[in-house]
Image (cartoon, rainbow, N blue to C red):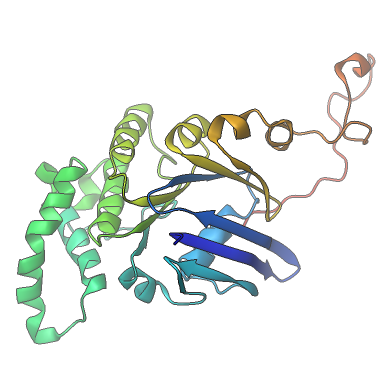
Length: 275
């Protein structure tokens, strides 16, 4: 049984095709990196898997169960948790309060029972905060935390739910070098039984973290395989570095360098978008 299976996902926004038939299989316990240039469809794919968007066509299966179009709170109860590109926290609330709030995703809310429920969940919340190195900072407002620590609060909010599949959306984005190193260590130390799907533009980390790598380009799977195999693939290199197939207008071998007096930069047929 697969941890995550995507079958021919399509998603468009107006005339923009963000996903164009994406299929993906992720095994239980696998660490999979999802890479590709901006506009490739990575974030849209996460939003479809996470229940924020419903696909125009295609199916999503979580541990063998069809979950296409289920809202995020129902997916959380089925074992899916995720982080986001930008940490969105309540500045005046503490890290502990955030993690306790996330814990409630797995419990039906009954107003009278809430204080007792929170008391029972506090021990687990503190344990998770300790695991990401924030135990000593658990009871201070998150506004006073460094940005890297705020990203770790968000990670703790996902982990406290006890997920079977964790979606990490650019966990290193916006971090200083010291913060990046700290977050990398924590991510590398995640339990191996936890299935992880990672979007990350730090390619060294994305390739080093993953068991397998999937490259998206223009809403489609371009390549998939072991990290070193994908890293060396000429088509993957072309997508990141630029250019086009030999013989096309976009391709210019070094021997055909522009003559003196020619424009230093010429752009033709440019297409841009962000999904």
